[in-house]
Picture (cartoon, helix red, strand yellow):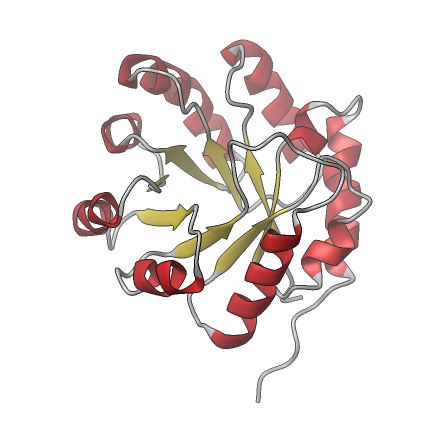
Length: 212
């Protein structure tokens, strides 16, 4: 079935061994499209050390391993791609360096014009939702409206960040976003495997419209 898929984002700080075990539990729960290794305050050395451990686990789970904000660590660790949202120039450089063999994604846009401008660089996806904001139980209104607008009009895939529970997952899936991102809802769960299974059940109930 053609429907939204899960896009996991790691906590901003974590113990690598613990997260490695949590990832294995997550993949036991079902389909996961991508995992972003999100370490915004870490050095290249620390990001690469974590990625060296986590990337093979993610890839063994048949998901794409993405590194946030550090093209060097992404390249050296064998990750499948990078997420860059600092400036349009950085995004363009990443696209030139990584494509077509690896994925380049971006996000953090403040206006519709910014979103369209970044999409024109040739990125593989656009991320709606602020990675650095404290998560609420529900997705932010701007995330929902942005994803809904984008999914209806543009071909570049988009990701919409959900809240820290699964209760509003259906609302996020209903935007038509290609991927639904989860952070705290997964890593703070007492049963990660069940959380992923339950999330996939929700997403399966929101198939994309058939295109003639």
